[in-house]
Length: 163
Image 1 (cartoon, rainbow, N blue to C red):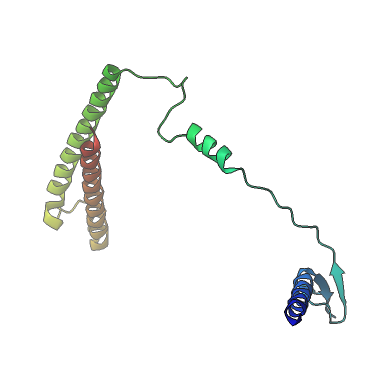
Image 2: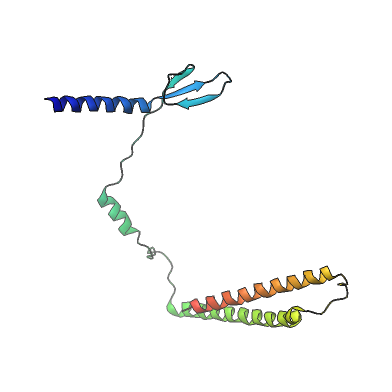
């Protein structure tokens, strides 16, 4: 008999603590600052009535499986336009040729930049009597060479990704 009474007592204590945790009090101090608390034992606190919790049921397993089966990744809708393999091959070849042309242009640009850079000692121009201006131009040339090299790497990667 003692076991059920202990269970009932524990249950009632649990329910009281759960109910106390749901109470929210708005407290205002002497400076007019508002503070929300879960205990209203202090002066100037009023209980705030909060709306209940709304619970939305999740869809049933069967309905969820049907939805995922309908939306398979990689599948296209029935009315999505199809491209025949000949047209796609022509497009791929055009893309490859454009990338090769861009690569050739970038490689030519890099060769000219390196020639002008002259191993880090380009010729001074007439308006560069000030050494700081010369260093600024050399740094810009170095940056341009780095960008061009990265462009070439990206174009080669893109060409490698083509089928």
